[in-house]
Length: 160
Image 1: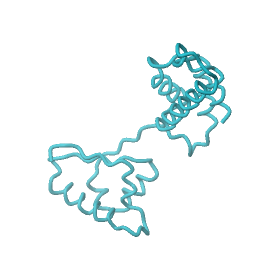
Image 2 (image 1 turned 45 degrees about the vertical axis):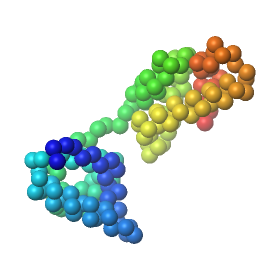
Image 3 (image 1 turned 120 degrees about the horizontal axis):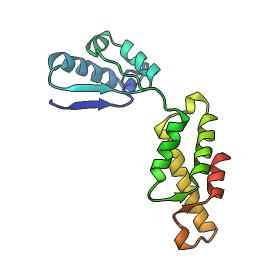
Image 4 (image 1 turned 60 degrees about the vertical axis):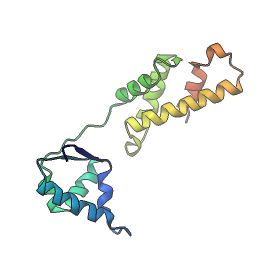
């Protein structure tokens, strides 16, 4: 009480035909608490728009107790590029223009269903760093250049 309960991927609580009815029990408990203690805490249900719509429609009691919906638009490719660059800046050196172009092209070519915004940016960055570290080992890079991600490594990310 007195805080915020954040439930990510909340729609998983209402998956139909589940062997485990814990989600249904959790929703019923939340409805009771949302009614009886509505002025003592905040609940944020988060998830993908279509899944959350099904979640909210699965229980009328829940829907009537959650008065606000905020939908965040998907990031544009430019936004995803900035996330990747910000994750690398300060610790790594690289050709920013080439990386920008590579990330932009890779993200724009994804099917809509695969565009997971920040998660994609994080996964791309982690894979880039893994490829970079493999490059360091395989190419006998001088220690002074361990922090420099080459165009060759970046180019390899665009080919996948």
